[in-house]
Amino acid sequence: MPKQFLLQFCALVVLFCFTGCYPDPPEIKEVSNQVSSAQIYAVCYPLQFAAQQLVGDELNVQFIGPPAGESVVDWRPDRADVLAMQSADVIVTNGIGAQYADWLLTVSIPESKLCNTASRALKLRDFIQVDDVEIVHTHGPEGEHSHPLTVSHTWLDPAMFQKQVNYLADQLKIQYPDQNDSIETSRKTLTDQLDVLVDKTEKLKKSLAGAKVITASPKLKFLTRSLGLDDLHLNLKSSDPVDDQVDQVKKFWSGLDPKVRPKWILFPGFSPDTQLETFLNELGLGVAVLDTVESQIKNMNYFSRTSANLDLIESSLQPASPSKSD
Image (cartoon, rainbow, N blue to C red; front, side):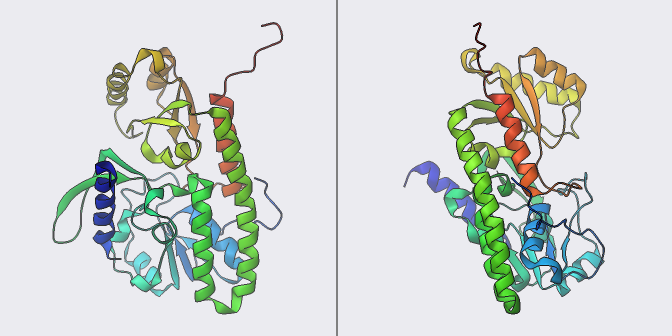
């Protein structure tokens, strides 16, 4: 077994041990944000969306996490949130290996209620680990410690999300056997539409042919990997001082071979400060801001937003066709 793969395998095994544990057809429904007693909770919008489409209007699927625009990193559920989850039927998560909501490691929820869609549906080779970005946190008797970042935004790759949807459907059929037929019908609708996005991704991958990009954060790596892009990531945070962000880009840029430097930098869900964007443009970098599809946006759903991401990458990265006069 190659040493690099062995190290990655061991790191993921350790992570698992921490918890023990395009079209928009008429039938697509808006996800409800009403505050009520939910039978199902989900820790991010894509999982909430998928669960609600699978079970229909008979059950309430509710998001549990920070308000839109706030960081999931700093959010923690209060006592009422925990009690609500403890009384729910199912809590839909990614799970370790692509953990999106680290606060799950700090609350007491019966393991039997957790539907860890990524941990259960994806294989070891599907996960993405970033060795040069570390997460420091505290839980358990070992206290504060760090480990390499495991990228959580699996749903940005439609093929990965399709695996999660299929696993989720199977688990919901077990939980709600009287709805097996309707869940199976909804599963077919969801997977058929995901097939459209997977096909669109594969076609774009061929046309981009391994283009090189910079990403402002590792968050986009499931998307860039699905497109076969050579992704040189930074770790810029919108909350960091802009001078620090500029310094990080300067240091990174100086280490790149001038002959093969990328022409685009992709930002995950936030736009660069004007000072930073001006600096990036001076380097010859175009800027594109992509949707991380983490929280709900009115009148848009997972399919339309994922398709829009692919359209933006296509229009940004593909070279313009030569004019007849060239």
